[in-house]
Image (cartoon, rainbow, N blue to C red; front, side, top):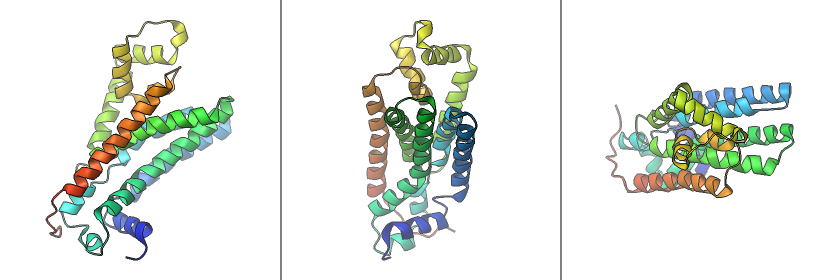
Length: 233
């Protein structure tokens, strides 16, 4: 293959590593955010929907596909594993990440707040959730991590304790005492809550690094994994 990244992504789409259906769902959430912005000059609901749904759709099943032999033609054409991994992660993560950043910028502009700060915060949170879910999703079932995470979010929202904690996080001016441990646990289950109220800038850097670290660990696992080279039936 003479054209590296575009050819790799076309091949990955062909074998189902980058399904079109996932992009369509994310596009629908992004479109909702755009409609919301043009209707009300805010895009928070669309952004939250995108951040909630995106982790489900960034799994690739890349390693499982490679072990089944679905990537034999690609790897046999002198395309390296790291090129395959990079193309898969870019193809899986970039639509949701770019969409979230655009909606964050629009929402900040509509509210008259700092666009740079809003984009940075949302980018860090999105990188955390997308990175962890994509890293876990190199194995089948590719969407398990995202589904479990969404389940935790829903459980937090419907439980009295969880909902009270989220409300206290969103409205710190109410003066409701929240322990650091409880806030941390809520942030892990519902990372989008970090976007509500004042948070230390270092916290966003830390969560972004967790997402990047998960991707690096997943990459090393993929590069060192033994592949059978047998075609899947």
